[in-house]
Image (cartoon, rainbow over all chains, first blue to last red):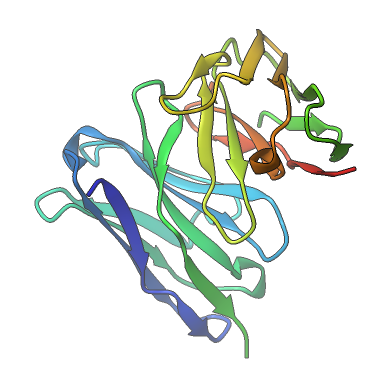
Length: 118
Length: 108
């Protein structure tokens, strides 16, 4: 089955860390750039980070730069997001999304919820 | 950074209506624009890429047009399954991707 499945979300205190994972299956993971996109409760979509198909380049939204790190393991078809120094405003549903042939995000997971609260 | 502005924010329509949503970019993005549909509690779904290229499996009542800074998503005859929120996204800037704020199509 062609899909991506996120995991690792939960409730965490401000200032703490969390690591999200995204497991890919049914397609050649190493051929695709991958992204994290988040959606705060009741709000719109916010792009968070992107990693090239081979991991050679990574880019971040200004809101997370210096705190979040995107990485991937092509041998295990996995994408990660290491989130440090978490803030209340990082509370959101985090989606893993694949870059398709035309450059848009053609496959999304169901998301994993991160809640930053004391 | 490139800002994406959608209008309207909310659109009230009836089944069978022709619906048009506009997305404006703060600078030219050529044709690097995508449209997504999101229903409550669900992940976004890609409808259109490269401004006008319909994704496989997406009904032909959906169409996209535009280039540069102004783009439109049109639903030629609104169906019950189309009540949802729609987002545009630019991917011209390969350092910072960005979404519009969304347009909710609701029942009139």
